[in-house]
Image (cartoon, rainbow, N blue to C red; front, side):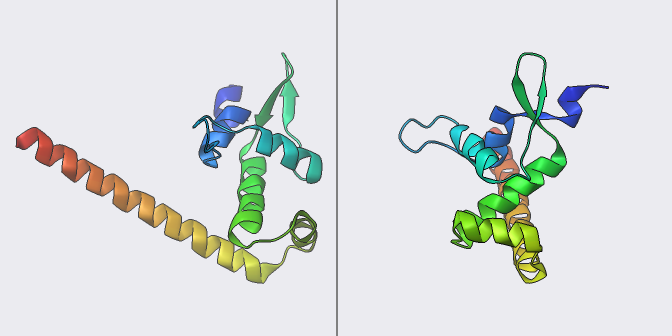
Length: 122
C-alpha cells in the first residue's frame, strides 16, 4: 500500500486549498492545524515521524470548512453546527461553487495551452 497515493501531507493539502501567506508567499499550514483543533472531523493520520497525512475524505471536509468560513462567511461555531447537521441547501451551493471552480480551471488550462502554442509558432 503506497501512502503517497492514498494520503497527502499537510503541505500538499495547503497547496490544494491554496492557503498561501499573503506576506511571505509561502504555504500556510498553520490554518489546517488550527482547523484540526476546532473541528473533530479533521483528524489526520499520523504515521512514522509524527507527520500528518490526510486522505481524500479529510481533504473534502477541509474544502467544505474553507468554503463555509471564507465563502459563506460563517463563524467557527456556525461551521461546526453545519457539519453536524449536514445542511443539504448549503451542500448544493458548495457543489455549484466547486463545479464553477473546476470549469474555470479547465478554461484557464485550455487558454494556457493555446498561448503556449501561439508563442512556440510565432
